Amino acid sequence: MKKMPHIARNPAEAREFLSLHVRTRSSVGLVPTMGFLHEGHLSLVRRAKEENDICVVSIFVNPLQFAPAEDLAAYPRDMERDLELLSAEDVHLVYSPSPGAMYLPDRSTLITENSLSRCLCGAARPGHFDGVCTVVLKLFSVIAPDRAYFGEKDYQQLQVIKRMARDLDLPVEITGCPIIRERDGLALSSRNIYLGEKERADALVLSRSLDAAEELVRGGETDVTRILDVVRDVISACPSVALEYAEIRGADDLAPLDIMNKRAVCALAARVGRARLIDNRVLERRD
Ligand code: AMP
Image 1: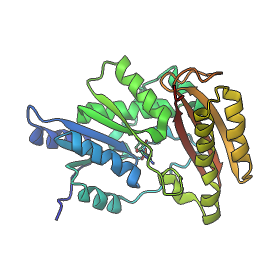
Image 2: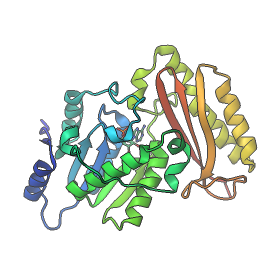
Image 3: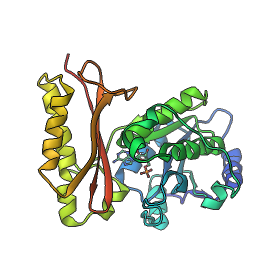
């Protein structure tokens, strides 16, 4: 029988647990999540377990990263199931503060990243990455991890967090982990629960469009416009999938690209029914 993880509901409880369990030379790995866990999250947890002595998972649906019209209230939650899954992974500490324990009513400090966060999802969701950076910095401050694990599923988020850690000299190694998909290609996401049966089938055009992009680049195509035309064509064949953006940008700096002359990422966001889904693929030329 695996042991239930310890649960900390506020910074003081988390710090107390860590002060008792972290020895001078032990390392701490942190996996920040918003809960409603799936195999994507668990892949990060397994990596953190492998690479560290102590594994901490945070579960917090961060109000600061949702705009007023977004799905904060409806965001799926199932703490009991999450704890069962984490107990099977032998996680040491679950840090799950209430919004009130995370944010004081008169808080007045916000972290802003001014470059990488402005395009892609950041353009459609102003303030979103300020909310992400602020909560992640607060998690780092409480948990003091040696390593933190983020999925490439949220590709822009990973780059923004890496930039924040670099710019603020945070003593934490940021590790990106590969996207976990269903067998048919759909990227796992807590928001997939919003999809009806037909919508779920329709959503497959997203990963298929990325397959097409990858195929073109493998075949030697270097013209970004031509690649994106194909991506958009694949998606528009399914009218119930409303594309928000499909873009190809530099994989590290997220700068716009006309020609595939360096490692790039094809990133997209679309609405399928009430779900806003994102997906991406890193594109590398063979040579
Ligand atoms: P979330 O709970 O959606 O905020 O996600 C928490 C972490 O899990 C983030 O670093 C995500 O990028 C990562 N994640 C979510 N879905 C996947 C997936 N399908 N594969 C890999 N990582 C994922």
